[in-house]
Length: 235
Image (tube, rainbow, N blue to C red; front, side, top):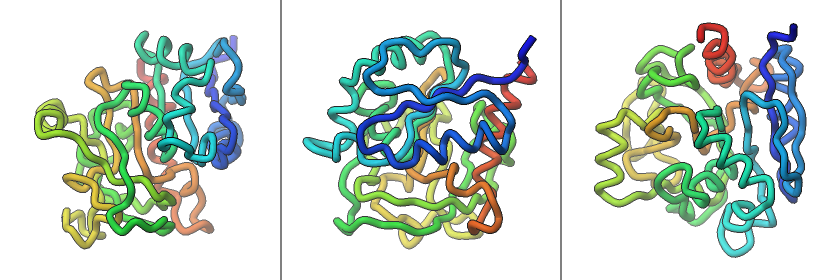
């Protein structure tokens, strides 16, 4: 009997991080992984769905706005609503907000410029299947690459995120201090990643799949992937 976890990486037109998102579980974690084309209508036997980064549909209209209507997204939404783990990195986060699986929106960076750089992420909580392998307050070094990463939500939504411990990551300095200088895009509360109330859907702007080998500058992203694998081991 195969005890490996089944990952599915959704591929949209102009996805450009799908290969990285596939290789981490398949090659580094030795789990099962497959690509699922955006026009497919069946996910199949899947435990974790990844919506990768990129520029789905060329970011026309609004980032993630067209991808949200891809045929496979009906299956992803049903899978998520049924408790399945869903992760959206960068463009994937934008798609998750567009389809209503996560609160808030991602707007243009405050600088109105595309930013590609390493940032420091403070782990706000390890009470999730995505951060259980991290220490609360730990600082991770993870790269970003986006032009629309400015997280915005109304005051009631922000208060709900705080009260329900839904903010997983905040941009910080290397010591974990939450400052304006450490905020690369103007996100409210320095928010870099959030989960839904049921804690099975994660959206984050940074790219942990690009931080899995020290030779690349950091392997801190593995802590997020290892958390996911361990969430199944200890079920």
